[in-house]
Length: 323
Image (spheres, rainbow, N blue to C red):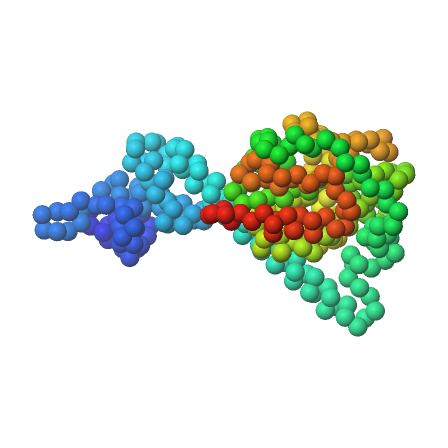
């Protein structure tokens, strides 16, 4: 068939077909008179390219799917290379989402600052005595004692767990991509109108979750610029509770919820008891390509921890394509 007929059957234009040919994605036979002779297989390839492009996969990166069809597979994504291409596309979309989320958070902060400028009232997350109580840590806050509870983690592969986040996604911890993911684990976040466990301030390493979250919020853009691909907070609190915290504090990243302590069981993460609840001890993992590269434990003071992570990233830059 001629190019016009191919374009009609595939639902595209002759110009697009010529572009696919220029990339070597389709290679029609030539008749004796030099005209291109397209077949039903070419129609199928062009339809596949258009379908994948509609999913957000650039035309230039559809080759593994087309090669899968050419190898005789019933579906273009039956081959391992196709699945890898899906994962790459997901990772790239996740990075774009993180960047857009950070930009949105910055705009919200600017909006709040502008809306309250000169009014004598600050943005919601800064106003009120109770909010200040959560952000201001006592001078005599007891520091956690260094132990070996996390010494086994560096070099360990992340388990194939999928935890819910506050954006409504299921996040696979072993598929966070080639760039560094920062996962800070914390006991629980207090919020106005919710009592903390009795004696919370006297438990070493317990107090300071809100201040820690605000630190990662305030340094989020710098963390991305210094090599962090993604940032997550993680606790045993449910997603609804965490979602309120994300909204109230204006966090530009998601929180992961693990009420069943599946990650603690899989990795042997340290926990403690307070107020009749089992809670995570505070630590932070730097994960790259599904492997724990570095661990911060114990974490103190929590309100300065984001700066500690930022310093480590600057002192240990990535080399190569994943940087």
